[in-house]
Amino acid sequence: MSREEAYAILDRANLRGILVILLTGVVAAAAAWVVADGAVRRPVQRVLTAAERWRAGELDARAGIEGRGEIAALGRSFDALADDLQATLGRKELLMRELAHRTMNNLQVLGSLMTLQRKSIVDDTARRELDEAAGRVRAMAAAYRNLHRADGGAGSLDFARLLEELCASVAGGLMPEGSRCVVTAMPLVLDAETAMPIALAANELLTNAVKHGGADDVAVILAPVGDGSWRLTIRNRGAPLPQGFSVRTARGFGLRMVAAMADQAGGALEIASEDGWTSFSVRFAPAAAREAGARGAAAAAAPAPSTTTPSIR
Image (cartoon, rainbow, N blue to C red; front, side, top):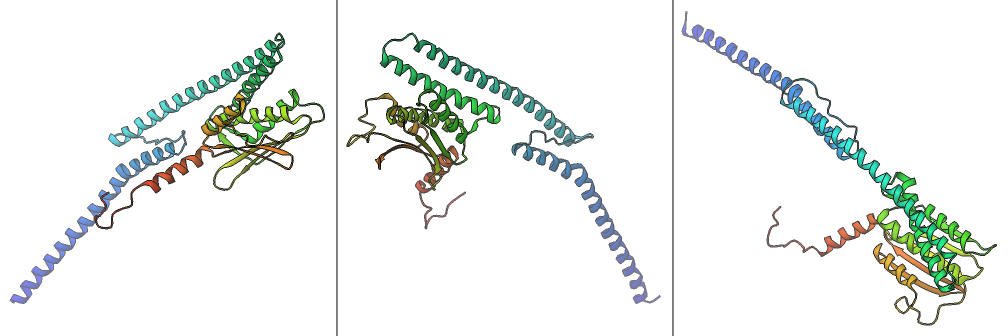
């Protein structure tokens, strides 16, 4: 056998060995990937997906991993934790509903007691003050009732519907026959933090409009302003406001309370008197708009990045 033939046999043997090694490596890698995908990646992905769904509010999301091993045990632990958390949230929601219901009932009872007490008071000023206090309590009760009706006390309400209820209450109890309280309101859902002070302000302004407007109609307007804020306007015909009138110089408690409620809701009280109409407006921003404005102000107040020193994150 010549040297060339001997080396050719060796080269073919080496090539076959290399191919077998490469093929074995590919098969081993594929098998390892399949095993890892089924035993590690997919179960871990199921746990992560269930966790993300939980964060998004899908409280029924579960990993549902069966079998043995640490990852399966992790999935079962997550499902058990989710069950416990869901049960706790259910109990909390039940307690919050019961609390809202009892608060609403207590406010209604308090308003009824004030109304009964009014009958035994002779002094007209005291009776009027008691009527106004009872109206404020009824406004809070109406807000709680709408919160409970809207989403089981979860914290938001249809404010246009609340305005209609307040208008009907004021018109039925204080306005003379033939007068109307007309509500023109765009749909608006408010959180309890904003709805409560604005409801109290609306009730106070409605009471003042009926008190000073006589037998004329009262107009209630709720509309967006355009910059994320809203304006609640209550208008009535009557004697124009005195020259230089200001909330700061007003002696009555009502307007000072309205200004305080508007400030609490992140807004302001605006007053106008023209063409025989007297308008009191509360301009306010819902909680989402206030948070966005706060973030924008914080971003604007943040120092600009230096052009000479690189920023480190």
